[in-house]
Image (cartoon, rainbow, N blue to C red):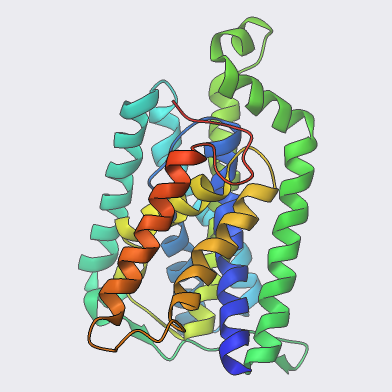
Length: 289
């Protein structure tokens, strides 16, 4: 039962991350490799505030959301005029910068040593100190982010983002401030990602920079692309597939000596086949390229 609850908690965390990245990727058409950076910012801001200042988890999470959204301006504001590969490179640079800061600012983040002993959330005397309670918390926050995303996607704001994705020049010609909408999309996306970061840090009670590196950004992007972008179904389906498939491969009865490599090969083959025959994802509406 504990194993099942662990998987459900991780699905909740990655659902939040996938929904957050879907906003700039699927609705604005901007392929970003910086989502793990905002994920890490949320985790570290929440952790440092809780452990050094004794602030409540939910207050820390709210501060992390605002801080992450503010930091997103560093990549979104100077990059709004970039397109295609140039924007991807800008987001990649930001990801590397944030990882380098987290890894080398040892006095603040403890760098590669990580921060252990992160306290679990608590509110009104209720401590989320076991897997069942934490699943209720993570599932509730994932549902909240899902409903916010649903509202955003169907709002005039979401329609403008779609217009920018399809034809930026046309969106400009009807009086829409494309730069402002791109910046807002990134700020909202980074704020959502910081929620997942706060949840992850308080769940594992230990963080270090390797949890928020470029590989993690690529994995989050893979979830969105495999599941499909441009709607609500795709990121959720992508999360379920990318989290459950590796776990399912554990039960194939493969000898322990070769199991990790064989599972990775099967995992990669499934993803390659999906990208070959469903390049827009399993349930996506938007196709890159």
